[in-house]
Amino acid sequence: MATAKKVRLSVADSGVFSHGIREDTARTASDLLQEDMEKHHVFFNDSGFHNHIPHLILSMYALGASPDEIKAAYASNKSYQRPALPVDNAVVRSLHDKEHFGKCLGREKHYSNFLAFFQQEIDEKGVEKVLNEHLFSGDEIAEDMLERMFGGLIHPFIHSGFGIEFNQPAIVAEGLAQTAVHENWIGPLFFRPVEKAAGGIGNPGKKSMLQILEEIRADKKLTGSSRWDDSTRMKNGVLKRAPDEMMKYAAEFTVSADQVQEKIAEIINTVAYYTSAAQRPDKQIKFDFFFIHGVNSSIFLSKIASLPFVEEHVKLRLLEWTGRVDLMLYVAYGAPNLHLDEITSYTASRSWESIFAYSTAQSGDDGHLPKLVRALKNGERVCRPFEAQAQERGLKITGDMWLKIANMVMDSTRDQHALWVRGAGFDEAWNEFGGRSRL
Image (tube, rainbow, N blue to C red; front, side, top):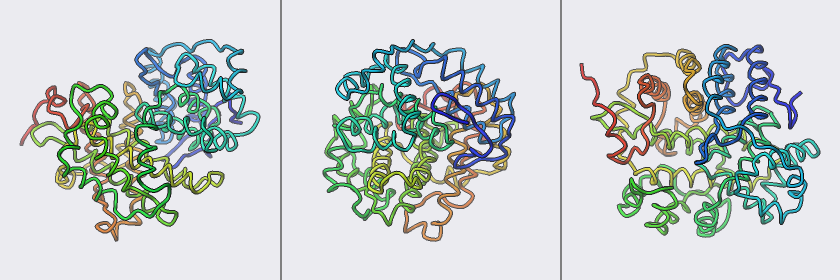
């Protein structure tokens, strides 16, 4: 049985989308996730780069990987992880006091302490009560935590999402601990003022996310606000040089209670569109490393919307925040020109099954590849019911375009020189890539 201290997968824990999962792989994945939790830190270096092992193993498991594939991927990725820091039980006890809890937030040295704390909390109260208390209650600390969940390029949201999706309290505890040690600038600088400008939570969305994206693309001040040399481009580029413009457009993305499913489809579709269409016609096809985080995080939206223990206004808020941060993500990495014909003209020569098998066989990958493939397949599933109104809904990606994009992903990652382009809107990011071979 899965607990806050024990990872235990079974084929019943199939996630939002799965294909051909195996009981023997479930056992292997459980053992390796347990080892990762006990032995490794959440960051693999001092610069805050994330340990992706849980994302990798769970994505591979969901796509039908064999035990040997899981073991090979784990062996490759564990080689560079930092060891877990020892738990300070005095600090763990102090975290029950909200003042002390607040003082420890944002300090990565306390990851092991936060993990032990959230394991205790979940063991005592259960996942549902802990999420409601520590993320969704609306008190000062919970608000701070909820904002931190979107820090670090959405990694705490992704990590927690995997725990919720696969019914693993231990992974949820990891996600909450990871959330607690991230910095929080996105709340005060972006989410809070945008929410105020939008008139609160849950107002009807009058524009599709695609409409807002097109308005952003036409705003030259905003699209030029992030620069190649900026560090933390959202914070030090977009929100320094064009904060009013970014917040104005972001505030237009709102979600009312009767729009939940269509807005989930809009988010998934729009992020898949700008991620896939951000190509340079004179360069080999590559997907932007930062944009794919928006795609990869989208797989959890339907799951969150279905959770009976999460109040409606919380769900609406999470959808609004997700759409808004995805819009800023596009601006932050150069607001690239988008070429839909790069997708429509591509040949889908391989089946989904072939692409799943390819993505689980790449032992050197750290998880971004199987996450992306699985999120794209989920996108096809979620958006299909709205395709009859694709133009009205602002859905650019329809029909077999999802499979075409997955083929593009597979073909573009065969070149191990560099799997991803990092900043697709910047000329400098493409310098290392060659031109396309022409027949």
